[in-house]
Length: 342
View 1: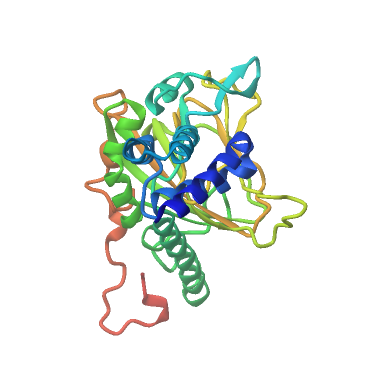
View 2: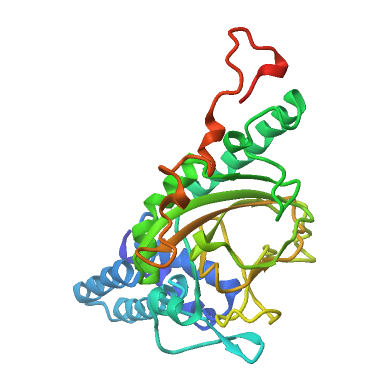
């Protein structure tokens, strides 16, 4: 990139400075920053500002120096937004409100104070897309088994089910090996984000469909530290003009866990995650308006805590809750339709 291109791109950043507080211009600003630092760079104060500061020290052109300072200012502001350091959510009475705070706070401290935290870009959007397709394919496959074998003639621990009591009719599965692997891989990240020593318990995923509602509830003892990770959704039926940038939020109640209080809606893009104390605070979703929405829940408990239930009591990850269901129910050498057990 030559000097003329640098000046042109930095001028774009300067023009957008006054609009940075408006969400609709945030993506534009991020795109401009990306152009300055290169498409493979990571949005953080270390990568952006160190690069711009180095450029500032190397150039003598007054105009370029001024624009570099402007872009450093912009990068710092954008880093704050991207790392969820603004806005902050506070409780006032029975309501959850948004307040801008000038001071920064780590995710672990925010989680400790509020019993929940939103973390963006936990996994790459392309990985999220792959996992979303995996869940869609699993739901299609189970529909085929349901039609071909009939309900009750296949192993729901291995193939999933449509009988989840919280979302009846929607596809779900406990302990899918790929999601249990993700659960395990993210354990160290979760410890850093919560400030707690953790053990993985289990994963559970759902493909919500239109009209499904997740009622207010708290989780069972194996879900002390819960996460819900957005993998993908089909919003193609939503009228953009009527509902611009519509997204299906999860609501979290106050950290006090008080029943019946108004919740705070939190929206997620694919790859984003909410961490919350599942046994302590209520969480729920209103009826889904879009075609579908895939989420995976990753559950952890505190290491050496009162519910030290490693792998949710299983021998290892990737197994069903009841391992006895893995035993074959039909060993005939020439099975017919009624003898097949998947």
